[in-house]
Image (cartoon, rainbow, N blue to C red; front, top):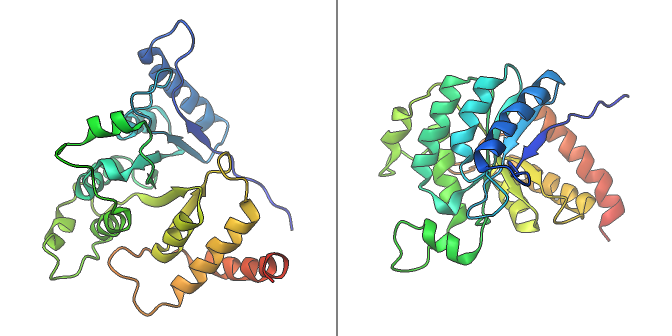
Length: 250
């Protein structure tokens, strides 16, 4: 059986020496056009705040121009750092993008701040105290909006029907480099983008992810945020898990 790898781009919009941030943003558009022409699968833009040398502070703004400048390639965030935002606002933004560019928008979600502590505090709307560490709850709420799966008695349930891009929706992904992110990706049935540059433990994480997917698929109730992975992938993940278990587990 032959295997053809799919190539994608994660762009941080680096600012070249002697150039400006505006130059870097236009370079991103040029690179996206080239990736589209060369047959790349995805073009994701990163989120970094207050970082000298990088112009990728607002992926939700950049995704639209990138999608408009290309024809076929999927475009998305790599990723949206959810703790900075309201889940409903993220749902509205990416619903609008999906309505404008149906079938082409990815919503990559991360937990890391994408910056230092002081800049993270500057990003907070309410600075009376530190933001709560409630990423799983944020993720569940966001997926509930996108999937229209919030319980009927949830106070925000009606808001799902007001999303501007329905019936189109983005494809959600979880970004991470740790076993805990792997657990969440499996529990929510999400596609998982693993940061190999941070953690090289690819076989172990892959096996763990597949195991979590298998467990999640067998659960009688997945909660409001659950979005199922296609059956063909779940079948593959079950086989992959069995093979890796033999090698990795005692």
